[in-house]
Image 1 (cartoon, rainbow, N blue to C red):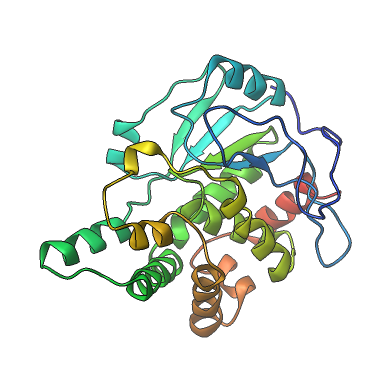
Image 2: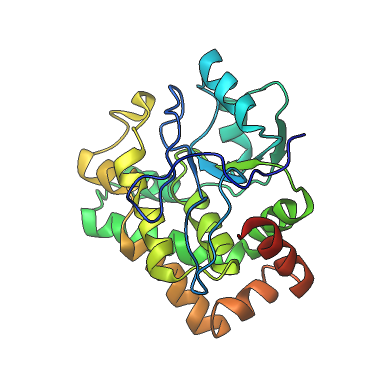
Length: 259
């Protein structure tokens, strides 16, 4: 397997976006490399990628992934999501780290009871989902971070749209690398520019709700940050507590992913 490369791509004028070939079947695929932390160090390009699901990638896309040297795909989708849209890509080992989706089910439950949520209700449900990420799924995010620490080769992590579970994972990884929250938020919000909604989801709910569910808002990730601060006293105690990241593992992440 190819080790992480010190330099892989040119950078555009943005401080947090690496220039990558566009994939035909995964609109939200991007490199976390290029982001700078509070100490002036840079996340190493070509090591960790985030994405929407990979079940629709083309043969041309597979060639791009091969050129990137990807060895592992860390899949945060729930069990049924994976069964419905599974994939097998040569040279890419699939690692399931399931976090079951909840917000769509909550919306559907309300609508079955004759309650049509407003856009504000949908935002509140999304914020609740992010609080649950923090309170219920720290160990799963910890398994993802440890996998990145244990394997010094390029890896990608994803969920379905690459925005919520993936966005939370990216926030925790970047936080562990001492990236400031405003930079983390900027990367998080890139989903609104990159992600193309799957046509299969069209018509499955009122558009004012779908518009909320298939985008990201600052309020979503802020609700996670607020929960971390209020319940655990900050990111460091959370990473070394519920997430279960040891000091040694965090140091390995820093050594491998910063330059």
